[in-house]
Length: 485
Image (tube, rainbow, N blue to C red; front, side, top):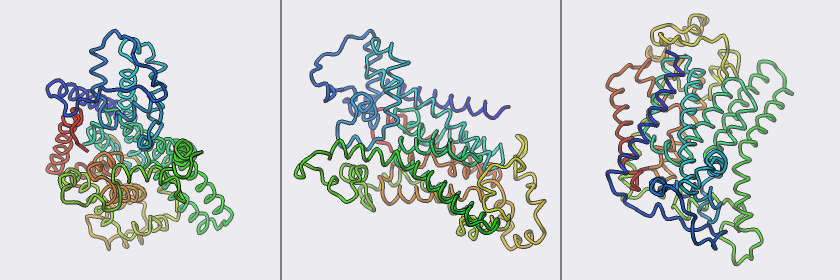
């Protein structure tokens, strides 16, 4: 069966499942907080006291009551813009798309269910459609990196039922961010240079951690400059590569910086010093950092309190999976990992060879896996390299050359390591489940455990049980306005 079609079926089926669970739990249980449907007039339109009548108020009420937690901010921003300081913690791309869809395709529905319900409906449509395309992008990226279609399929199916699934079907920016970031990674690793910068920049307009995607350009520039200097012996080419890499990184950072400047202009510009907020007077007036610290208490080790132990337990499965995936990769070839892949590049005499998809590199057939067939690059490897590899334990001799343990995965492991450390030491730790949910190495490692690396039925049961439990808990708690992650 065509894997693309299979992934589409799983992605759509999983979204139907999540939306069905949301409706089911909302109909069976009373929400903890019933204030979701409250919608005060926009500050810029305070004179409006009555709302025009609508045809189906019961449908409108059902949609509006499902707008909970951060969804309230996204819908409010789409309707009224950035009215309050704390609303600047939510980046503009998702609300902009909600506004555009509500005032174009769904415009006729405003008289039927009301404007706020249409905004909510638009948010649901954007999130769920973006999720389907994000799952397809993950499969394409996985094929490029893992060179194994079966392992890539398994990883993508795991993503379709990931433990943070409730957020990918709600009015949250997770689906949009995953589509833009993973889509950018796929294009970049396929040899495309400029379009990924645009996608990464847009991902930074959806979530703050999108700026970290600029690191992929930095990693790529380092290896290309190494190749230009030590293989081609062209110093001028090194400067060109570094300049182009820096320029693309700046393009990725621009939306984040522009949004901070926008917040500074709205809140600080033209105010008397006595009226200014504290962050306005800082040498580097970073609004986002102030909001996270001031309103939500985010900071290094700020969450390390005994009363937060349940939240650490809630985040422990995804953090454990992340740590195991990092340690497993590190143990497979520590020398190459700590050299940031330059050791593998030196052996190939091509510092950039493992950063791109190459036509001549084999991709496993749908009916074969890397565990059952000797990789082509092993058969062609010079004898001297094979002897050197024999110094490693036998269980690592194949894994370090292909699949999850290939050198191509190094930048993703570095990215995941930084994200996991940030989630554990700095953020509200329970957010780690959705914060890390768009990290491809988690699904590659889980797929590796279930296919080529171990083929362990026990691991498969454990991983699927974890996903199923968090999908049920998330749809139950989150949809009824109870804390989840």
